[in-house]
Image (cartoon, rainbow, N blue to C red; front, side):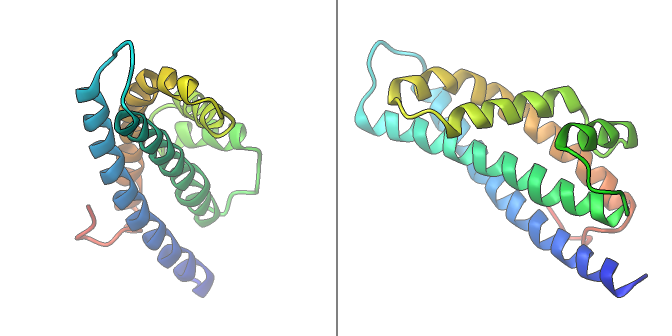
Length: 157
């Protein structure tokens, strides 16, 4: 194995651990927001929970697509291509579960990033809770791919 590949594997492992930590907090926020449920009006604390959830969703999806998947792509010695082309190829390689779902996740992340009205964020919460599980399924698929190539440490989550 080349030194460059070893360096990329180490970077991938660091990104993976950060992703696992982020996913863990995202899942906790999803559960908290599910317990809040849908209401006519929300307290400030509940709105903060929604804001935290959407922020964690955006961060986790970015970490997954821009750090983990891009590093995998480099390890596979594939040329740099636009996101849509990369994830379509990743689906064919079984690196991810669904390219279409990742496009939807990215679109939702972009909606969150460009939304400044608190009431609009609360309207996105049902989609965020739904797509968080899809994000987790894609991450699990990637874990199988990485483990098969021995790119993750054995004691990884």
